[in-house]
Length: 265
Image 1: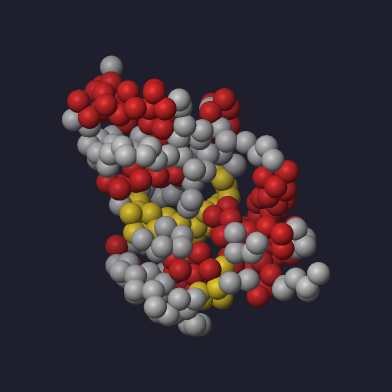
Image 2: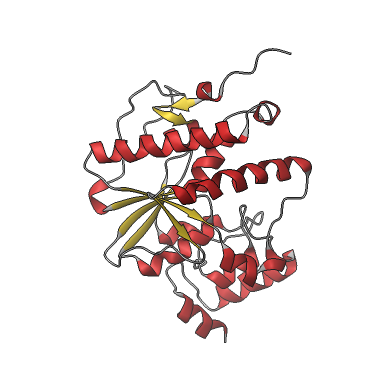
């Protein structure tokens, strides 16, 4: 069997972090190392002045590390080595943003509230591969509790009320915290695409040939329609009936939870 490259040689783009994270950073900063795809059209740059905090879900950074190498190679990298790589990325990002006079914030979310409230709706690790990856998450994220720079949350993100945040997270649940921010936008890994609240409905589990662009992003819909990270979608008939009902009631992407509940009462 050929030698397995060390994790330090994982694919990167623009910055010395995993490729999906680096591609997102290319929307914020000028690359400092060669980009993975020189022919990729330059991403639309983020107006950094719109934000006073750049927020990273540590699980997303970890996911991007895990996905940067083939699974058949991942099993040869120990949990401590993977965790050390995550710590190195957090260190780098902290100093990168600080060097530009910007504030980077990191968090590790237990989703304890979600697990206790929606236990029957959640995606679980079932296959051996899924359980192997879940063990990496459990090992690494539990050890971040000793890092004073990494905040811990159980339900929603809790930041000062005057926070204008740009969030890097693959977990749509985190977006439900937007009411606690002056502004909260999403920066997607890999694509570096900026998504404001009116386009968060793209995070619902997609239904082929079904327009979901008019849907608001609210907790009830997230739990029912599902996503790719946390929630299993409800049966297709239930989802289609709900979408048709919302279309008939003229739902729109910026509808808040309270208005949604009144509309559906």
